[in-house]
Image: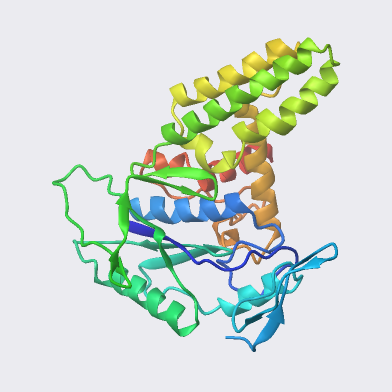
Length: 333
């Protein structure tokens, strides 16, 4: 199995939401769709496999100073409330052409996930070629320098050799890890690199927490600072990676929490409890949202009180978000 992250350099757009009838795999600009939804959907696909506009003038104005006018023929105006909707409409037909491939989008971050069976890469390579052609036809430029290929092959058989991916005549760099929406995804689907990065960032913030303590600020202020600047790092997208993290990785992160407890002289939420609660919260939101692409994974049993467990042969899939979320919902009922 292989996946390619592609960067489409469009102007950033904020505000607005796409209607429910839009592309279900566009996770940006939509109610109840967040970065962890896109990551969880992408990881679920991987783990399951293992188991044009008119010309218009535009300028930028800051105070009384305005830039020169530039005529744009494609894209959407930056900062316009309609930009997210227009972009979602523009990329609506950018979908996979083969059932063995999936295209996951979050704004202009695009990932192609392909299942390669029996060393047959044709559908995967044709999908990338089709995406390249689609971008050319729609006046979009793929940034090959930011495009990476990651091969996930957890089989213990003889090492396989895969054809290099080429876009516009340039070979795409093949990596053993890449950062997707703030999360480091490794080719062995381990989370040590990601958790190490989180622990390092969080420990650096402990210095500022100690300085605030030295100024004798109240414990409530210290706890608020911890929640905003340290806990937010430790628990970012926690639902998609904590379940499959190792005991050593969790202990390294929890040590940061214990250090913060000693500094603030107060008890702070442990990461396991936070993970469990966020799994429940996220799952309930998905269940209530019929437009969510993963809503179908939550199906009630005949009793109407418990959800059907997902079939999983590997421990990686069992400990991933969706099976864990279903267990959390069933335990809470």
